[in-house]
Length: 455
Image 1: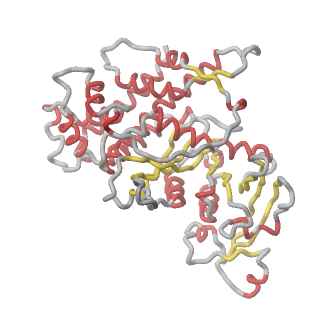
Image 2: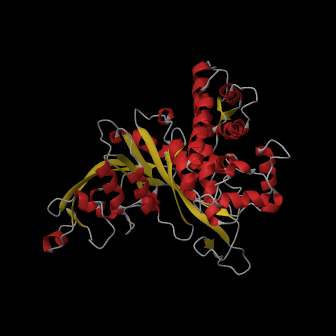
Image 3: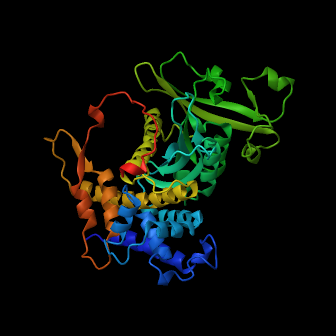
């Protein structure tokens, strides 16, 4: 029997138990909250674990499921809400970071490199027009607005593990600032084996400077050179845009000085305005000059559509097709959001208060990482044991969505229940991979919170 699931569960329990022993560090009112936690129905550990394993049901359903229908142990909804308000958000952030950093060996590689994607998504919760920083007011009078937060995530795109997140107000997101925050908090053993990939929302000179300072490789999607807000507008004379696709090296002298020579030679120099937010530029700058060398790759993505990618990865190791594949792997972040929302239940909250919504976001992320880690192990074992069959029309792989749901049931099991071979169970849930057979447009839908009344 594979004992890795047991290690994952024991690691979660050990972190929560350590936190419970120093619960005053995470209490909203130290010296008062959780002082006599052993005498009540809801201890610090039970409160955290119950939030960690919440699903899509109502609060009453969640309490009954967590306490295994034990009438004497189930607290009232009011008691639970009071308890969770006594725990600071830092407790769930600590749980997420401690657990997620405990299993680095499960990450997968692309030619020996980790592909880390940065992307953002809306987290919609119950509508409340009084929370101005999150309330999106509709343009039409007869339409209803909605409340949302902006979740910026740093994702290992191959293993789908969430490495870090930054939660921002829905109406005041700053994706570039979130990128810098997550890059500063990321400390891999070998930065040169990390490739950062991001979409156009994170496009900026300072994002490039930050990756260069930390020694990361990067593949960033840029706006077209004919856009005045695009970085590539300063390199347009070097780009053979009359070609369908190209892969060229460009070089510019970046300077914070401005004189007549620099103005006249805009094909050589790029003026960096000191009033702009470019703090990492000044860490690279030497005598007011920095030489920036970029590789610009134009790739075809549709019949009449092209994308521009900027990278510092060398020709000698990465071909044009490799750059295309690396950027395509960024879609792993979008897949992670789908699993996080629909399988881990991030669409279903059990509160209307923003601070408590954030509690559940960090709890879902922790549970999601536990599920995705075990799903990866099951997937690797299935591939190792399966014999390829030429008669099969589709390739069958472990169903990650079902695996994440199954891991939640495993985390809810009591210690006195019989042991289960979880990895073998996850390997039974498979689905056919049909990406190569599908061809349809992506349809966007409206945003709305899932009402409490229908759960």
